[in-house]
Picture 1 (cartoon, rainbow, N blue to C red):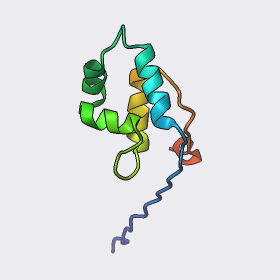
Picture 2 (cartoon, rainbow, N blue to C red):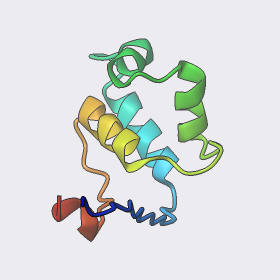
Picture 3 (cartoon, rainbow, N blue to C red):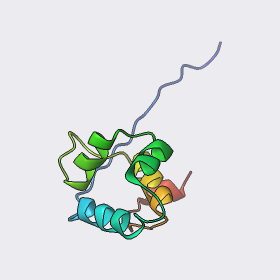
Length: 88
């Protein structure tokens, strides 16, 4: 008899002050080499969603996966980490 498997989800949210402003500041710094349209294509976001991130007005929380996409596209480390990420 095969043992039953149960999934367990771990969710953790943190508040990061001025994260949207940091993202916008970095985007503007690299604006001559990479347009917003290019960045959005790279990360798979609409420009509207990107602006919502920069204004800190997105509904719900920004996923860590999407934050990592932003960091990669902007070549920046925004300093957000969860110990659980390192356990993977």
